[in-house]
Length: 117
Image (cartoon, rainbow, N blue to C red; front, side, top):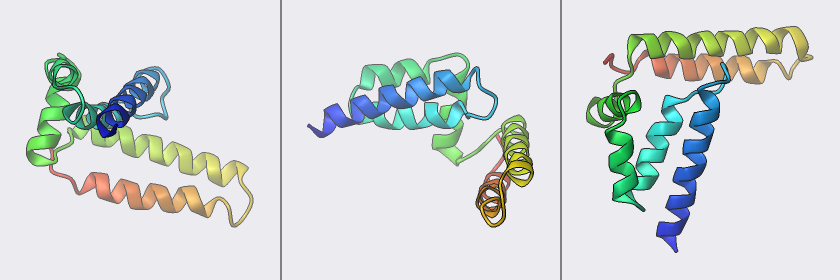
């Protein structure tokens, strides 16, 4: 049963990552990393396909080996966080705009402190 749950979670993550390839505020690589994690516990063949993927494979391997994020990935994530925080400041009333601003600060700090690939 657990294996089936991981398989479904892997496909859901893969789907969200595919959507994220076209939507600027939805990240792609973190969902692919999560999909690889889930597939490692449910389908080694699907995990191998992700690890062998020419675009996502290197990102997944660097994350697994060193917890590293590319400088380009960091900049893209921080830009998305900043854009989301600005939208919240413009369109959300006080105190609700503080939630995405706090999330951007916390998440952005964590991403920026990861090793660079």
